[in-house]
Amino acid sequence: MPSQQEPPVKSVVVPFEPALSQTLLSRLGGHEVPERWQAVDRSAHAPHVVAVPGDDGEDWTAAALVTARPDTAYLKIVDALGDVPAAVAAVVAHARRQELAQVKWEGWTASPEDAAAAGFAPLSPPLMRSEGADGPAAGYVRWLGDGVVTDPPYYGQTTHFTCGAVTALVAQAHGGTLPREGLGRRAELTLWRDATNFPACEPVGLGVAVRRAWPSSPVTVHLDTDRPVMLDHYPEKEQEWRALLQRASRSDAGRAGVPVDPGHLSMTAIRDAVGRREHVLLLLSLAGMQGFDVPHWVLCHGVIPGAVVIEDPWANAETGDTWVDAHLLPVPDASLDTMSVLAPDRFRGAVTIGRPQRSGVSSCAPADE
Image (cartoon, rainbow, N blue to C red):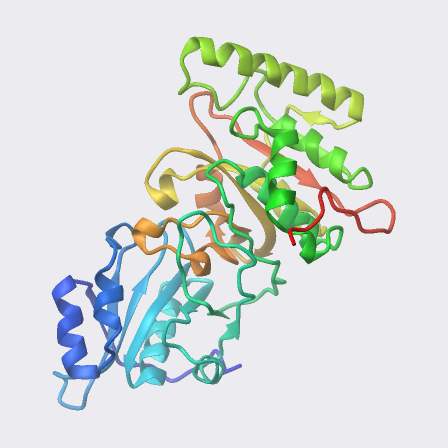
């Protein structure tokens, strides 16, 4: 890896304008770039161009389109043009100035050789992409600070409502309890069917389903409210029967020996659990990262100074978001704390999965063929 004490890189940073891609094409080449850059509205992810000026200070010799989800601790290179190593070095320096945790690089035009030379490691390709989300075949990551985070398999949810099931499956695969070949649609839908509150998975039902699927895995539900959750957008009649099912889930938890902790799960507790090699399925709102207030499950599986590393099983194709954004995603502690306090009761819901109490590998469903 290149030294963190790298020479200063002269660059300019300008907001991305659609017309700019045509100018870059004429200056720097890259025939596929303008169409891809303008195919979606990236404005929600603060698109900007990091460019390297030439000796005359006017013409650019290199440039990269850079985006990132709001309230996160990374930058993503969509493409680099011209003098690619110089463009990437400028982005890395730009990220360091913002004290970010990592830079990612989508593999649309990046070669493995260029990525490795710039200090980037390959991301494991996705086993499945989330519904409707395209993305490059390859992606790369460069960590900019301390901390080592292992790379779980990336699996994108194949429906709009199976995020809870997917996070549990990926957690068990990352922990070695589920073989990677056990990640597939059959497993995803089977676990969701056992956990669902129609169509979403609420914390207690998800915890019980995880315990049923993997009896050797210690499971604790954290939910600091007694009332049913995730129901306020339904009409009253729709709320009533779902609330009844949530009360039934609490009874199921008692019979299955799954504790329901009524205390508020702090960020310190989340970091400590991950530090013990446990996994935390965390319920959060997508308002910060995606712009709409929808409850959504993510997996907390790594910690670095100042941030928690998550797996998000969903990518928003409409904003240019891909699996490269969602995989190994660092979120600052303060941002994650805010995202995971949900209205209207300002509750936090989570499921922690400990390391298995006995050896052995199991699967909640056969892998897809």
